[in-house]
Length: 82
Image (cartoon, rainbow, N blue to C red; front, side, top):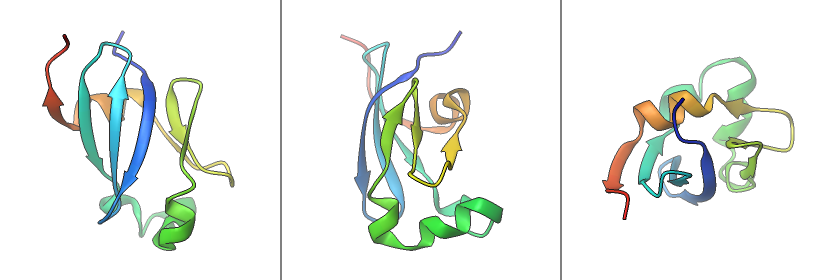
């Protein structure tokens, strides 16, 4: 089982700075999702910045979310667990 998201900070360029339950941190780029179905709403940067942690992953108010395994595996890790 992969780590789950414990905190999220939206960054410019449709990126998310994530902290995982393992203590690792990473940056996930959401820009590839912006033309796909329900994720098109994330093109609005103000809406994109409403992201929150929900049940170990990230989610937005209108029920968009990203699989926590995808976030962990596809994020660019920025630190090793302490």
